[in-house]
Length: 103
Image 1 (cartoon, helix red, strand yellow):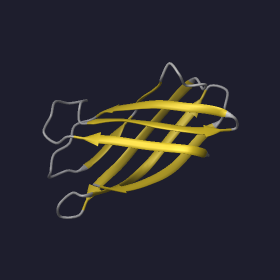
Image 2 (tube, helix red, strand yellow; image 1 turned 120 degrees about the horizontal axis):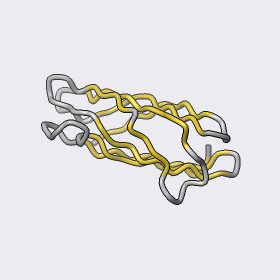
Image 3 (cartoon, one colour; image 1 turned 30 degrees about the horizontal axis):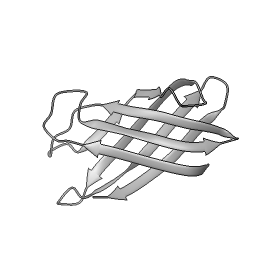
Image 4 (cartoon, helix red, strand yellow; image 1 turned 30 degrees about the vertical axis):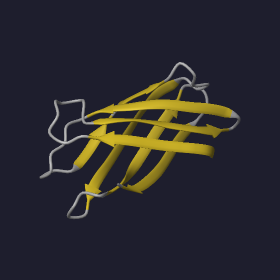
């Protein structure tokens, strides 16, 4: 994977399917993957999430078949995140990876 970018915005206490919003964009095998991520509900007592609400954007060169992302927000101040991402295209293979970040 080259030229990768991964971003997530997370809000606690909002309606279901609105807590996670983000995008993953990278190149693999000379094709650009540009995938939007959304979904799930979070609260401070259960800062874990899983969502399969992933979709290819209009500029993506890859047609997405299915995918999911999961993660956990941790540390006492909820300032760190880590998890896994799985994306399966219709004709350009599968991507499985891990991510981590800090607020």
